[in-house]
View (tube, rainbow, N blue to C red):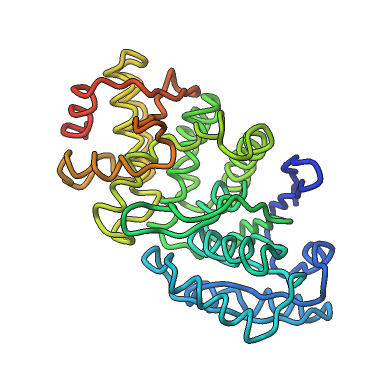
Length: 360
């Protein structure tokens, strides 16, 4: 097991990374105020891992309440959130009861928002079971739900007490889910670490084959990057926004298609190509850099073009974006492979070209 820390003063917390951690309740119990937890998960993950985690906790004298939700992005909405509140209230959960998110990004966001708001805040632990959640969404305290007009528009910053990333569970991911997670892995390299991009170019097939050593390295490196960025900029006032590379386009794709049609990582992959193309049109990077991004995403079995949504519709959806300021669209663009910056002045004609003619 490897352990990193997200340094946030009194709210600092560890990230444990390793195989077969779900059965080690001793990693969890030091972070509980009461010997009582509510595990929020979905039907898919519950069938695979809920019993394992519950049994480990029960063996340590912890009372376990299970909240099993439907699986899918389309369920990241108010009615599902209310189902969590209903069970917490019915089972008389207290402010010191700990909520555990066992699942991917949707479960982590839902459970985290419930924890942030139930009785004005209860302890929260992330147990991510997808690659995307282990390398990105479980770290940093972003929680929330979707609105028909925009993704993740209702939520809160609320840090967990612990992130427990069991890399052994990644072997159970469907290939499409694994590839979706690789989109976020690639994103970390593109905006912060060219050396990591080079490593990914050498090892992407090993990651797709769930090679244990390759996955452990990728998860650790992404967690190192994310932990450092969150420690510097918890509320996304500056450098943390760079981790949204591809997301302004990607969120618009998800909303335009209907939540769940494309996985989040798939939409981000297409969004990263559009952002790279816009970076080229702004004169920041060369076509060879765009080609390098496209080639790596293709090898990761990810889409590299948006699915035919009209440019005007994409613009409408992009206007509802948390990174916008003063009514202006703000984009994360590549200065080079391994470095990015925020750009608020993009000529309309260049943006239209990037929206209408994404490279394939």
